Structures are given as C-alpha cells and as structure tokens.
Length: 276
Image 1 (cartoon, rainbow, N blue to C red):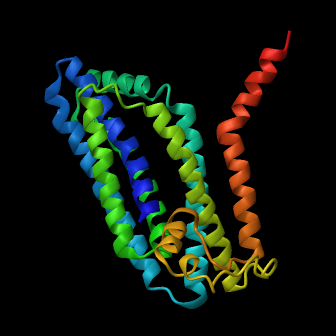
Image 2 (tube, rainbow, N blue to C red):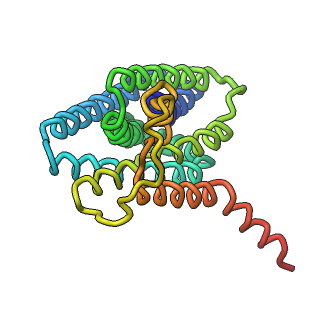
C-alpha cells in the first residue's frame, strides 16, 4: 500500500502540475474557453493509460510457471529502470518545465485548433500515466492487491488536491523540496523492485549465482508475516530470507543511486569552485 501510494502521489502530482500550470497560464491570458480542450487531452491520456495497465496486468495474470516468473522479473527490472530515469529526469527538468509548457500553450493558441491545445497536456499526462501503470503493475505483483489499490487511490486524490492548490496560486507548497524527499523514497522502492526482479530470475533459473541466503529471519514473526513485514515489503521490497544476490543488488543500487541523486552534484560544484 505504501509504495502504491507514493508512486501514484508522485507521478500523479507531476501530471497534476502539468495541467495546473497550463490552466493557470490560460487563465492569466483570459482564455478560459480553452479549458475544455485541456481537460479533453488529460482525460484521453488517462483513459489510454488505464487501458494499457489493465491489458498488461490481465495478460500477466494468465501466465504460469517459468513464463510468469520471467515476465514478472522483467516487469520489476523495467519498472526499477524507468523509476530511476524518471527521478533524475524530473530533477533536471524541474526548473524549465513551466516555461516549456507556457511556450507550448502559446504555440497551440497560434494554431487555434482543438488538437493543438489538447496535445499540450496529452503527451505529458500520457507519459506519466504509462509510467504509473508500469510501476503499479510491478508493485501489485509483490503486494496484496486490495491494499495496493487503496494506496493508489489515496495517492491520486492527494496529487489532485495539491494540483488544485497550485492552480489557485498557493505558495506554501515547496515543489522542489517535495521532489527531493520523494526522490529518495522512490529510490528505495526502485531498489526493492530490482531485488524482486533478481529473485524472479533466480527462481526461473536464469540467474544461477549468489543463490545462498544472505540471512534468514523467517523465525521472527514481526519481520516475516506481520504488519511491519508487509510495510517494509511494500516500500523496500523486504524479504525475511533474501538470496545473497538480492542483497548485493539492493545495497549496490541504493548506495549508487542515493550518491548520484543527492551528493554527486555537490561534489561537482565544489570542484568547480576550487578551481582558480
């Protein structure tokens, strides 16, 4: 539930910000008549994302045995990779996304067509929707579907609420800080997905190294089948008895991702400032 909430909250907020920025700019131009086209583009993107998500999820559910393990492993690894790309991309684009959207709105108004205005938000929302679908499928594979579904809905409601506040001009929301904090949490989720992907490939026989257990805490109920275990599983992909391969991949990825996300830029700035 926790991972599903965080993913839909983060991805949903990115989509909500796209819509809010476009609507606020149109309002400032006195072109509220274009709102219906913006909503048309957003709703179309959401519907397509839902169709893709349902189609992929149902297809995976029909698989059995080794094919299911390989597919679930591939989805987990792909989701981890896209999550990683997404947080670094958003960090680099956060300062210019508003300017780019306003330029796109100006271009769409010049063209004066329904498709032009609808496409301003359609592409961005569709990208976020497809990404969210992929992430949730990976999360649903490894978590109780009901709780993951509840977390997803709560995350979307929260994202929509903040998007509405941004549209109304609220300044108390520190978007940059939000993305910095959630970026670290997303890295934790990606590490768990990566570890789960390795587990599936080891189960299917594709990976035949580092199969021995890194530790075994199945005897300790709170960390094997209790609420704490479920919470840790949803966030960091916790297993009470992971293989050595899973543990190594989890630690290596987490260390590298945290370093490059939070500290690599600081090191680069320090080096530049030290030059005469």
